[in-house]
Length: 454
Image 1 (tube, rainbow, N blue to C red):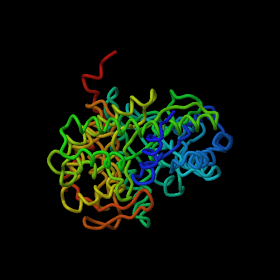
Image 2 (image 1 turned 90 degrees about the horizontal axis):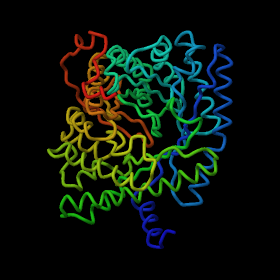
Image 3 (image 1 turned 180 degrees about the vertical axis):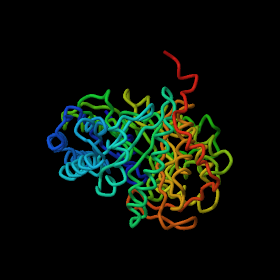
């Protein structure tokens, strides 16, 4: 039983420190919807999603009411659609039909986003993979809540540079097709190395092929809680700092565990994982950058930032794994620019550059996230940035991801507005020198030597 002090402490976290359950995500296999008749596949997908997720939103809302814990988003992740539609879809236009089916089904059950318009091409591409990838710009432009991800690299397989080159072109085209909304389509598109099968966060969530038929994955977040805890130990040494972060992460994870188990019970769907990610929002006091400042940096990006972020990420994970037997997804610290007011302030102060962000991604949970760049950035330069991040993930045996937004019609000094939890982003400068010949080589960068562990 929780003590009265623990109840009071949790209420304080929720009311004053922005603690929330960021998402309850239903992971759902659509592999049994595959077939050769496209119309039948569409109907099977729609029927399965609307039946299985019929009560997802209402259950999330009832848990929030009953326990007083904000549940911000209710989402769905599905099997990679390149696999589901491989037999029925003969070209990119056919895959776009499936994207619209996903959008229709997600809206019918009322979820915020549906992820899994995805392909896994770290070693090579099938025809179905290529058709889906080439369909992404139009699919994201023509739908509202569909999110897409493509895994182009892994520690075991190396980097598929043909996939990297193609994704640079896809990102540019997606930006062009949604330029009236500050290239918003790119907000719903992530490129991965070592993508996790059980990620509840968008835009990168998909339901991995080794997962159960259906699972409940919960993402919990509390940057404000961690920052407040660190304020109480100002002047302390690193041992005290680390212990404080671990204890706070433990408490946050227990809240997520409670919600996950209750959602699993009410929906009668097995519990999958808790993802303890310090995922910031534009709200004041809900910033990972401000945690880094509390640790002792003038701005995120100052010398020492990578070390401070490594410390934070590690202690968050250590605290989380003590609170739940099933911690997964992308647990740790996120560093999106547009969703974190402290990061935005650091960019404006010229304390944080794209190159420093890249260094930080070596030790954080994801990668270059929600970074807006000038709209005239070339496809090959975007591919070069992707390749750099994929290399970091491959060599370090970790997940890295890129959500890059070339904002058409805007340049350095301008801002892109995305709204809601997605916030706004200052346009960041990009190295002007070309990597076109490098990207044009094609083929695959081999897996590193330490991948051969069989």
